[in-house]
Length: 229
Image (cartoon, rainbow, N blue to C red):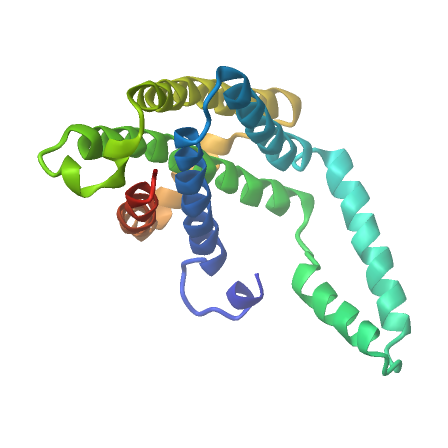
């Protein structure tokens, strides 16, 4: 946000970095399935992920959450500013943290930003799942499969990895659609509308999303799979 506050471009560095980091998160998250050996462990990992998504979006988009956190950050700023002449190093660090973390967004802007984040997370989630399936199938059965350590993963574990990934796709589709419907019903927030406006008015974002996802997938994912044993 600090970078965007003084930008001259029509494109947001915050949105670019969010998508970049989200891609890395989902790519490494998919690779966990190679090391999850039981359905119980898979369900535990999946439940933690779903709980994180619900808290990140459904809870943070509520008016109650916004009012409480906005009030908290304003009170914190007042207390820190009262110590303006204090040369204590801790006070200086607190001011620096406050400068980075303080968000002046109104509730409408806050929900729009989170709506775009939700859609970017959904795109990265589904694309990473399908890409992961294609990658592991190719590296397991492709003509150059001997080159990759994926060949040393047991057959049972490989099948479980594929099944876990396919189940994840279905579960994440249900979760994201449910969150979208809930936000529209409860808070009158239409995530798809904001996404459509974004890509229509700033079409070059799509090229950035495509190239960023390709980079993360082919570099980070394959690098992890090479050491899959």
